[in-house]
Length: 321
Image: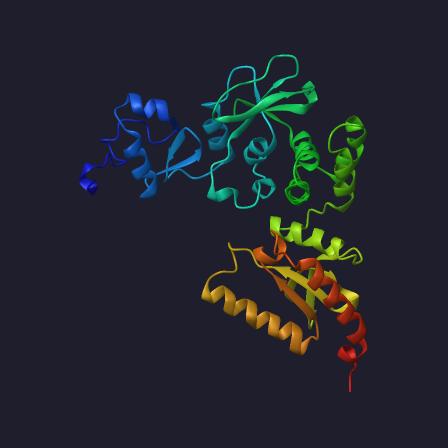
């Protein structure tokens, strides 16, 4: 197919360019699945959820996300879990590498109204009250509090803590609200995990990787860490470290793919870490995805060893001649 064969996103395009549209609508307008795939691949369109497309030039927003989901939500259903987190803007609550695949949309019906069956969605029934639901751009979704609680108890602990951190980071919930809501889930699935993770959740975490690394820190049996440690020289903050123990000059950082992949980024990271280690005498361990996730993860082992080393060498590192 040549470039001229494509239906370009100009006045020849048969669908509105200022609003999302469904695959079914595109097919009715004369497009084919092959052309839709080509337009996505070449950057003319993006597909935020299965079965729905938007022009690539439209900026992402909470209103647009709600409009996208409004095209696929069945009557009488509400969005929940990762889908609700996405609508609320808590992208850090999504599963690791979720940007690489289009997850099924999570829509549920209130309990006793029958299970929703649709190939595009992950669905079922869930007990909710009116206080658990809110309208966002005309779309019915679980509130930030209910969404955080559900993800905190129903997802793998890495994603669960990241979700709780995300909602706290955005100011969508408070720790007090999370703690006050625990008893309503007593004896329900995931409550033991939820109780533990709420006690660890911290809105200062800035990425899912940082949240997961913090769990490995606890797996290593280390004391509760400080987050976003400010390193000050001559009254000016010169560095900010992901997590650590300032009294031991011991810290750990997570290098995610979004901000630590380019040559320039690596150069900046290497420079600041050299200063921290050689001039300010920090013991600094750096981790990436392979260290924190998967069967080959070694973060807990490395953290334990580094902590013991930092504790044993603190005197010589801080000795001033």
